Amino acid sequence: MSELSRETVAVHAGRPSEGPLSPPVVLASNFRTYGYTREEGSPTWEAFEAAVGALEGGESVAFGSGMAAIAAALEPLPVGARVVGPAVGYTVTRMLLAERAAAGRLTLESVDVADTAAVLAACEGAALLWVETPTNPLVGIAEVDRLCEGAHAAGAEVVVDATFASPLLQRPLELGADVVVHSATKFIGGHSDRLLGVASARTPERAQALRHARGMLGGTPGALEAFLALRGLRTLGVRLERGQATAAVLAERLAAHPAVSAVHYPGLPSDPGHERATRLMDGFGAMLAFETAGGAAAADAVCARVRVLTHATSLGGVETLIERRARYAEEAAPEALLRVSVGVEDVEDLWADLERALAG
Image (cartoon, rainbow, N blue to C red; front, side, top):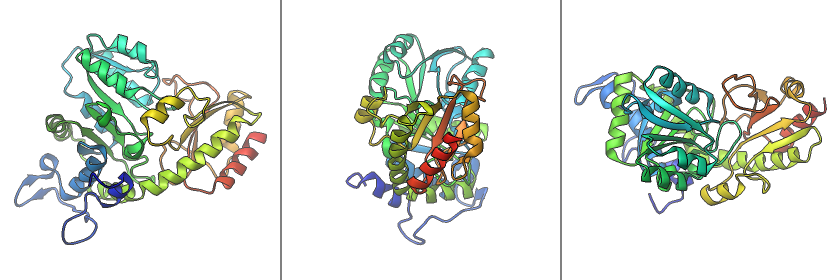
């Protein structure tokens, strides 16, 4: 399918060559001919993996959650391995790295992944570089191509969490990464109705290591969850097109609003990540963040006043979510920061809701 657009691949990849048009839900823990599902997989998982792999340009392995995929990507590290991780990024990934460092399983150096020079300097002697781009929650952009080149020169493997971008906007394997992970709960699934993760590897050997970790650690996906994620993937193109078009409008209007002190969105020409996102991504995405001029109390008030936007955790669904990030003690985020995952609602309805909430 290499000659087709990725939006078309998302619709067609992973379908059976005969029988039902869409892969069915196969509810089975074992099979007559090839063994046990935990070890060998199942047709429903495999259809989802084939579709994501076709988009990523690698071999994909499905997991029960994004964190299961993240943990499996870390599993091959030997005890004491040196890891360079993100100082700003998904809170639970950072907590997992910190807990493993505290237990003596690895040594950790945290850096701002948007600071290319600092990351490359830290990679000397490292076994693994963990990159998140765009970053959560500040939507920062890392130079994945340069980081992969430099990390590999230093002897380090590179894993990239590209959940905010999805495979339609960024494919880190093409830029040199060894593994890319996604919380398929988010944009890939797109409907806030399942937990699922997926990791894609550049080589069959690395994919087999992920598969082995899944089987040994029990990070297996459910058949229904894999089915729903694949169904969600079919509409990723249209959902993402609508979401990022709306995000661009909201970012511009928020940047001009007197009650907003800062907007973080790489689609804005003034954003520090604009040039990098233009060069490395196929769009600026549907995630943005902004800071209220009135401080933390004003940010809390916005969340209490919205009626069309929903104040809730997570992202990537058809509904627009807003979330106060400063409540996470482990997260290095401005105290008045609000993260917005833009869905598919009418842009004017969303703006009217935000404008009313900001005005008080």
